[in-house]
Length: 223
Ligand SMILES: Cc1cc2nc3c(=O)[nH]c(=O)nc-3n(C[C@H](O)[C@H](O)[C@H](O)COP(=O)(O)OP(=O)(O)OC[C@H]3O[C@@H](n4cnc5c(N)ncnc54)[C@H](O)[C@@H]3O)c2cc1C
Image (tube, rainbow, N blue to C red):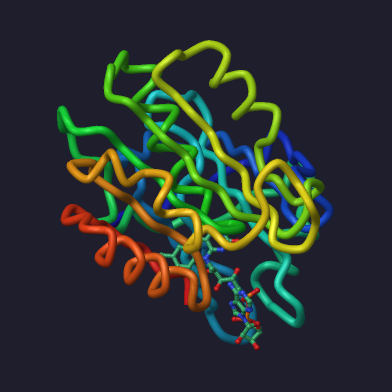
């Protein structure tokens, strides 16, 4: 595992609480879609925090998508960075990676848990994978949908890609937590299902998937 320097070339406000930092790396960082890196923050003590890589391995820049956490040290630090600043990055790490398969693919995320799926989905679609790909994404309100425009554009461009956004604190086309929406995939029991998020979401989604009869379940927990 190597240390890298990433110069921030662009910062995007994805939602009121989430920013994407786009970085030009000082050397090539080879990773698999779904892996994460440590951001190393130097202070009185060295602070390391894991962040999923949100860009695809075939993208030119490395992107991290960071949600602001109340009272959080690293997320505050990252939200205060500016274009031109550099970050120390260590990695890549993690076994939560996209596996080549003929099966349908289902990605289930809540909040910033979308980050590794942006990498996986972009990689699969840009590489010409023909699997049916479903994204079930849960956020609080419409304003919290991370990469909203990108999901819309990808859905238009790739007939095998389908997105369902469900809102937990606002009425929308779909309302409720992701774990209550599993039965909409009951015809896809042979799918490889990837789940990522924080809190109870991952466990409750796994329970719902197992109850529904899914066998190929891969998870990443942010807490
Ligand atoms: C493998 C992995 C990948 C990750 N990838 C991402 C990513 O792509 N984007 C991203 O935004 N985060 C990601 N995280 C979470 C991230 O590593 C940090 O935990 C998060 O940014 C909070 O760090 P902090 O230093 O700001 O908060 P801390 O200073 O560590 O914590 C401050 C307070 O916030 C609480 N807290 C910590 N984390 C959370 C949370 N996630 N939600 C709510 N409360 C919390 C703590 O209990 C504490 O009370 C990932 C975590 C893991 C394990």
